[in-house]
Length: 81
Length: 146
Image 1 (cartoon, rainbow over the protein chains, first blue to last red):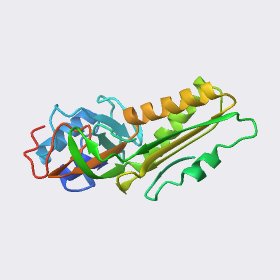
Image 2: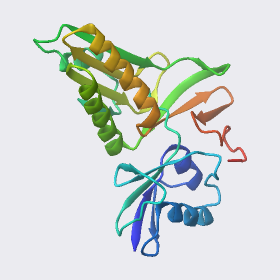
Image 3: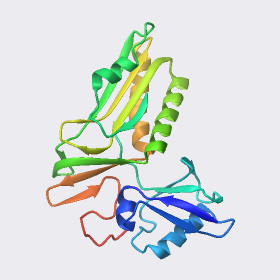
Image 4: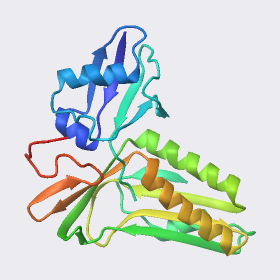
C-alpha cells in the first residue's frame, strides 16, 4: 500500500524534499515506516531527536497501524510562538 | 479565528474578532522576534508550519480553554515565513466576562502552542542558522550528528 509522507523544517532540509510517496507492507506501523525511511534517507535523525507522529493531521503513537493513502508527518520538536 | 498566515499580523483586527457585548476584559499576547538568543545576535526568524494541522491544533487548544475557563471569544493568528526583528510572530486575543479568565486562558494558549502546534522557528544568526528545539544540524552544512 502507498502512504504519503510530508517533511517539515529540519527534516525537510535533511531529506531535500517536502513530500515522498512510500510503498509499505499492509499492517505497517508508523514506527516501521520511520525505520524504512531512515534506510532510504540516511541523513534523517536518529533517536537523539524526539519526534511526534501525526497521521491525517492527528497525533498518534508509534504503534499506530497505517492504512492505504494515509498522510504521515514526523513532527520534529515544535517551536512556534 | 485560528489562522496560520504568511501576511503581517494585524493586531487591532485580531482583537476586534473577540469583542463581545458581554466581555469585560480582553487579554492579548503578542510574541515578537527578538534580536538575540543563547548569546547569539539574531538577524531574522523564519517560521514554517504544517498549516492545516496547525490551525486544527489551535482550534483544539481553544476548545480546551473554553472548557476550563468562562470565555467569550478567542482568536490566535500565527505568522509563517520570514519575520523581521521586532515584528509579531503570534497574536492571541481572549475575551471573557472577567479578567482572571482572560489572562489564564491567554497564558494557557501560548504555553500549549509551544508544546504541540506543528510550527517551527528557524533562527538566522551571524554565522549560521538553526531550527529551534532541534538538537542536531546546529550549523549550515554541519555533520548532522543527531
